[in-house]
Length: 302
Ligand SMILES: NC(=O)c1ccc[n+]([C@@H]2O[C@H](COP(=O)([O-])OP(=O)(O)OC[C@H]3O[C@@H](n4cnc5c(N)ncnc54)[C@H](OP(=O)(O)O)[C@@H]3O)[C@@H](O)[C@H]2O)c1
Image 1: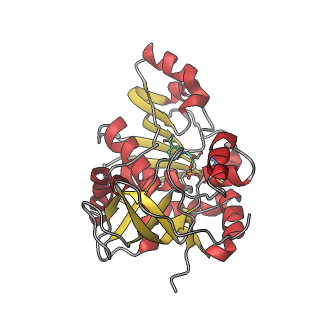
Image 2: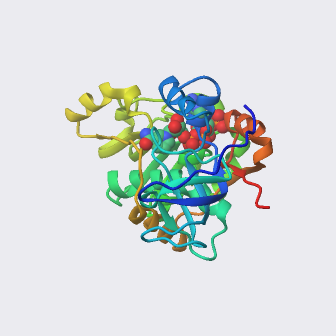
Image 3: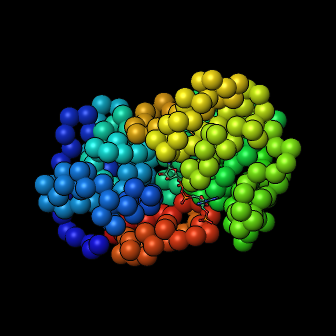
């Protein structure tokens, strides 16, 4: 991986030029660096280089239909086909971003976007804003897990969290009523009857969770492809499996994200911040164990 000077991109129809201030490292970025996603990589190689990153906050530089130069925005581009934003400038579709409230710093806004929207999808759409009395969040220290924990608690659930032992106190501060250290092996205990199970690392399966769920309970894995059998099983069960696939966004949903942030239901959680010149270290940090929230890449602003 190397820093490269590229031509300043020119906005196409429906796009605006954004000066990126903060971006985030995600699993797909690390997979691309490590040789994964060959089809996408080839497509970007044809354009001259492979840039990573799909989640950002920054300032609009050109006139769009809705946005004007100087507007502070955050959003994310199409995960498979969008432009990439680990860069100082990117041309992004206006539909992929929303204005940031004045009092929210760019790094905080970027830290909320994809995983905050994922938590909204899980708790508001799939669980219909009724996560129930009890929720289990596996991988509670990571990007998805910590926001799912916060939001399930906001809607009144007592949350049990699975995370590394070293993060236990911090996870209690995030609102978990009980912590089950990952190092102890199985996340399940006798008598479990969860209304909601969120499996952020896709470490379990619907079949495994089903006996530990309440009647009518919901199981959500971040990798539905890894547990397709679970959907068949759920069709025959009085417990449900929720399908989660976040590829694109829209300004309305991003607006909802910032509204929940304003209500105190979602607080940005930043594990670490790196300057663009330290991108390799940022990617390594993402891949390391024991993270607490999002890894931010900050772009030079001079
Ligand atoms: N389907 C969708 O629409 C969608 C949307 C958003 C994200 N995702 C996917 O969701 C996954 C999670 O994303 P993320 O940002 O939350 O990742 P992350 O920040 O790396 O967090 C993963 C968490 O899971 C924990 N973990 C890993 N293996 C575990 C295991 N066997 N048992 C218990 N905990 C375990 C990790 O703990 P340690 O730090 O101790 O290793 C970490 O806290 C990624 O694969 C991402 O691509 C999918």
